[in-house]
Image 1 (tube, rainbow, N blue to C red):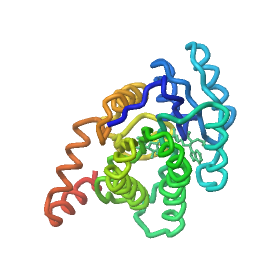
Image 2: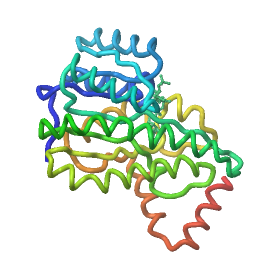
Image 3: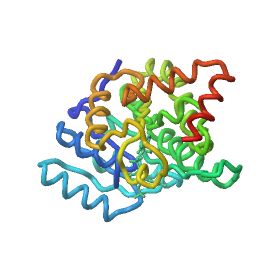
Length: 257
Ligand SMILES: NC(=O)c1ccc[n+]([C@@H]2O[C@H](COP(=O)([O-])OP(=O)(O)OC[C@H]3O[C@@H](n4cnc5c(N)ncnc54)[C@H](OP(=O)(O)O)[C@@H]3O)[C@@H](O)[C@H]2O)c1
């Protein structure tokens, strides 16, 4: 199982302007990586570059919108030409658009899928040929514990994130034969601008720097799933194993809180 090292090339992170992506970029810099950072907010990427420079590291600012398919293909070509081969990619950019009343709003689903699912594919598709050509690479896709099961008020998010888990499970074996390791990252609540926008209780909330360290340890171990905090992960995995009548009873108890 291939595990990327800084001597193999650079790390590329999408959604690096804030939250988890930004914290992982800085943690990778601390661990000796050079990082290409992508998001739409150039000012925030510039400030990440400055913060990395203060740590003695290097971040390449590579702005882009992951929902722009041709733009992403061009960006990856540019990164590999200018900054170096992408040895490790963290496809992290994403967003949660709550549907508080639980109504079916088609555009909420389309928007959530376009960003979290199609956006991730727009990065994965042009990334794979270069890694296949080199016969090695490591890719980590950011899903969520919300991808384990359907949760009320988060239908579109659960739909997108569960799809990413299925995608990575499906690709794991065929990519391994090509020397490419694919991993799925399933965090519970992490304190970031995204979770700050969500209402309601946030059990077992993890601080973003702690999340970044756990994720980087997961890159180094190479195991398929990087999931935390453990209590949240096992609670939701166990709920998923229940027969549906019990599962829905638990859901309705949870949504009354
Ligand atoms: N925080 C949590 O509790 C939690 C839990 C589980 C999973 N996650 C997942 O973790 C990932 C990161 O979330 P976060 O909590 O760190 O949220 P965040 O602070 O809001 O960060 C989201 C990142 O995605 C970027 N982004 C959004 N739309 C984009 C687009 N169209 N193109 C390129 N970049 C885009 C944002 O940058 P720009 O706006 O500058 O483009 C930002 O850098 C997401 O996939 C999220 O679903 C978060």
